[in-house]
Each structure stands twice: as C-alpha cells, then as structure tokens.
Image (tube, rainbow, N blue to C red; front, side, top):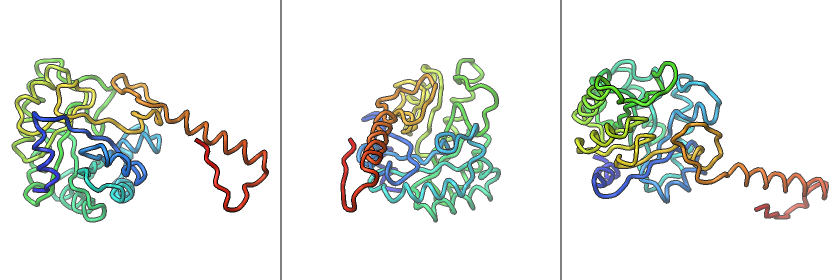
Amino acid sequence: MNSKIKKILSKKNKTKIICLTSYTKNFSEILDKYTDIILVGDSLGSVLYSFNSTKKVNINMMIEHSKSVRQGVKKSLMVVDMPYNTYKNKIEALKNAKKIIKYTKADAVKLEGGKKIINIIDHLRKNKINVMGHLGILPQSQKGKFRYKGKTSFERKNLLTDAQLLQKSGVFSIVLECIATKLAKKITQELKIPTIGIGSSVNCDGQVLVTDDLIGLNLTKIKFVKSFKNIRKHIELAIKKFSSDVKKKNTLQENTVIKFI
C-alpha cells in the first residue's frame, strides 16, 4: 500500500483530512503545503470550460491537467477522477486507470457509485490500483436538479450499504457529497476508512472543496460553498494597474520590473 495512503488512513478519528482540487502546477504548488489530498476533479469541466455537465470531460483532458498538477505535488496524495464513460466495465476501467496512472503518476483514481460498480472496483484493486469512492450526489449520472441525499429511509439504507460495500472492496476513503448530516455522521462512525465530505456536515473525517470556489475565482451559487477570499478582485486590480501603466508609458522599458500588488 502507498505510504501516502497509509498516512491518510492513520488520520481516521485523530485529525481532519484536508482535500482540495487543482488543475494546474501553479495551484498544486501552493496547495501541497497545506493539503493531505490533491484531487484533479472532473469539476474542471464546469470551472475551466463552462461545461454544463461533467459528462463532457474526457480522459485526455484529465490526463493533461493531471500532468501539470503532478509537477507541483511533493507531499500530498494525488487523486485523479476517472471521467464519465471510462469505467463502463472492468476491462475498460482497468485499461483507462492504468493509462491515467502511467501518464500522470497519480497515486489513486476516484470513481462515482456504490454497488453498481463494486465488481469494477474489485477488479481495479486486484490489479493494485488505489481507489477512492464517491457517494451521494454523483455528478456523472445525476439527472435533474441536485438535491441532498439520505433524507428518506430508502436512501439512507442504500447509501449505508453502498458505503460498507465500498469499504469491503478496498477503497481507502469515500467522498460523501451532499449527504444529510445524520447519515453522514452514521456512515463516518461505522466505517474504518475515512470519509471526505463536501456539503455533508463537519462530521466527516475530512473536507474537500473546489479551490476556485474557495478563493472566489469561480462564481458559484452553491449554498454549502464558503468563499474565503475574493481573488478575482485582486486579479482585476493588478490587470487594471498594468493596463493603466502601459497606456501612460506607451510601452514598458526592457528589463523593467513592475510590482502591481
């Protein structure tokens, strides 16, 4: 087992796990100082390309962004989302997982779903592919408006069963996205592996957010997303100062260094 994964597992019930997304080297260099896990999420589809669904993200996009991210990661565990349609069956899943890991040197891949993909996860684990699970809202298969999961007894039973099955299959952690507070707490308490929450209360073993949302670079209306800084404002000020300086001086002198912020 990867030493970084062992470290993640050791944090269960001891200290919170920090996970953030990154799509480039510049971001990952900064995140790596403060995170336990850096996730190259297929959320890049909406954040960077304005796609209305993660289904439009393909494996080549994930690989190219992950190669950039890898350059900035030294200590954190790097996980890459397997995009939509890349794990329809266990043969394709293994082929694509190996491709992702070969070209990006990722530590693990993440798949969305529970019992429907257990045989696929089993196959990946038998071939020594480290896997992170994902339950609750599943953007790759979600239809209609997103809503919290686990509010009915039927959903609660199925999600708890899925979490137990994922743990048995050998995933090292599970992302719980928009799962009702009491259920997220119950799943976290019953599992031996860590849960990473996003919109699933503070009861999870760790938290993940889209970094661009966290710093206010990406404008989002998602209720559970807290913006800790409005970086857009600082970028705009820097560009505004640059534009003004160029207009006043016509051109910048060679070897001139200008500090904008």
